[in-house]
Amino acid sequence: MPTEFKTFTAGFGLQWLKAGWIIFKSQPVTFIMMYLLMVVVSLVPFIFPPLQLVAVLASPFLTAGFYLAIVKKQQGQAITLADILAPFSTKGRRLNLFRFGLYQMGVALLLSALLGVLFGPALEVLQNVTEQSDEAKVLAQVVAQISFADIAIFVVIQSLAMMAFAYALPLIFFRGEVSIIQAMKQSLIVFYRNMAPLTVFGALVAMLMLLCIPMSLVPLIVVMPIAYIGFFVSFQAIVSTSEPPAPSDDASSQSQTHSGRFDA
Image (cartoon, rainbow, N blue to C red; front, side, top):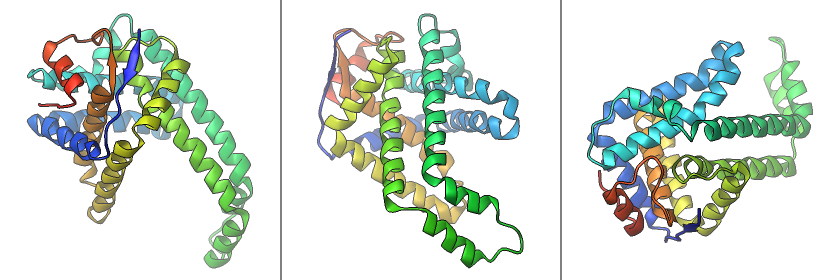
């Protein structure tokens, strides 16, 4: 399916976040509950490790379900918490979402291995810390084991991985891209061509997250759903194809995608 990527100016980063807020406030409680469900699933491996694989593979389905709920709101429909589970029963897309989860898990394992290689000595120092250890001395030992080059390498690779997966998921689910690798390449292209607005968008979200720290991060249950919605709005604006999205071919949604304007 031929796919074209539009390029926007830096100011659209703010516009996408505003669009996220407009859609969020149309049914805030449901979006918050959806986000909390995603958080709970992501925490399952820490609470019950045997379910780690299930949680990892379920994550793409829940994210796609969140995006589907956004589309429903744009079409003027009411949403329920159960809508986030819709991708589990969406024929023709489930296998690709499952494969997407496997790719994410594989990259996460590679990043964990890289973390061990780059920061192994520092991690060993932390593992040997006891109650009698001098904190200042331990901190000095950790800092001595870490170089700026190691940090830069890990940050760059981690960032590339995040950018590769970010738009790959909606490309696979909404645009029918069957090749995970191709979808990841396209996602990187999207970031390359729209670095300015996406940087503005990311900076604004990061600033909002920092403002949540004094309030014990509680406002994140509002900030993060808005960020998810705004990010999907950016996907709708940037990505266009010669065919309508598979899950929905609503005419108003298509006109919004081509104009770059998004109304709840």
